[in-house]
Structure formats: C-alpha cells, structure tokens
Length: 227
Image 1 (cartoon, rainbow, N blue to C red):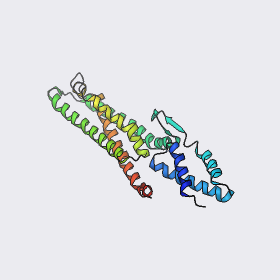
Image 2: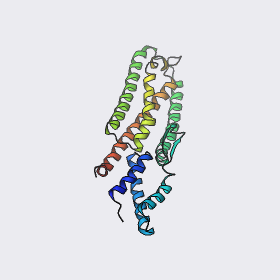
Image 3: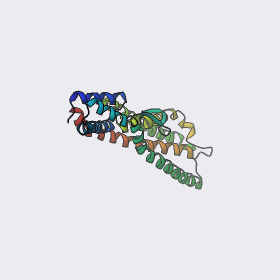
Image 4: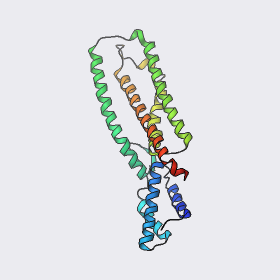
C-alpha cells in the first residue's frame, strides 16, 4: 500500500517537530519511515495511525535531542545528526591534533637550531601574517553567507556553523595582537604563534572540505526537493 500525500505530510510534520531539517539525513529518514509504515500496514493489516505510532516509537530514540562534548554541549540536535557529525569530525579532530603536534615540534627543533633575528622585518612579517589571517576570515564568511543564502541545511553545514566558522572568527581577535606576539624575546618566530597559524590553516582546509560536501549533498537532493 502506498501512502497518500496527506499521510506523508503527517510524517513530514513529525520530522519538523523533531527538528530534522538537515537534508542529507531528512530524506533518508523520511524514506525509511514511509517504508516501515507501508510494511506494517500491508503485513499487519493496520491503519496508518497505528502503523505510524509504532514506527515513531522505533525512531524516537534516534531523533531525541542530544549533544556531544566534542562538538560543544550547547550545539544540540537530533541524536542521529550528532552521531553522524561525530563520525565526520572525530577523525579530523584527532588527526589534526597529531599533525599540529608533529609539525610544531619539528618547527621548534629547527627554529632552535639556527640563530637569527627578525627584528628588522617586523612590519613585513606582520603584514604577511595579517593578510593570511584576513584571507582565512574572508573564506570563512564567504562559505557561511553562501550556505545561509541557500537556506538548506546539511550535516556538513551544521559542522561548518558550529565548529569551523566560530574557530575561524577567533582570528579576528588575534589580528590586533599579532604585531607583538609573532616574535619571541630573541626576535625569532614564536613557536606558539606558528602553531596557531598552522591550526587556522588546518581549520580553513576543513571548512573548504565541509563547504564542498554541503554543496554536493544539496545538489544530490535538489531533484527530490523539487518533486
């Protein structure tokens, strides 16, 4: 038995109440629920209301509002969304930490192996670093605005809004301080500042990846939205 348009709208309303607005999981869940309801109606000779109630009991746990310490306790969403976000974000998070530690350690060792002074190049280095940070910020704002304009959410846009964009915006507060913090007492490039700049570079790459994945997901489900 195929569900009617009105019955599918009831399922859509249920997903709206559960705040399942992320396109890549919404249509998957919608398809599963419709299939489950149709199966119960056909095999148990149940009414739509009874079948739908049974299916909602099955899905309520997965759609329960939750959060994660890694993603930020305040960043709540349906459990199925948070779990998918963690599958995407965890590998990036741990690999980034390892990469930053290794690269920073190598830089620190190399930096301490040479005696040099950047005192005469403060303005030039400050300018280059400021341009780089400004570039990161422009990319971050561009991706944020482009996704907001389309008014379509995905798992990838959730991560972008809640993780990437806030971290990139921290660069704005670093710009006024960069002129005094990028060199250490010996007028060598600060290892801490190098690590921070490298971290922002990694975050920007991650943001670019999430932005492209979001656009891909939106294009995949666009035909379904039109229908």
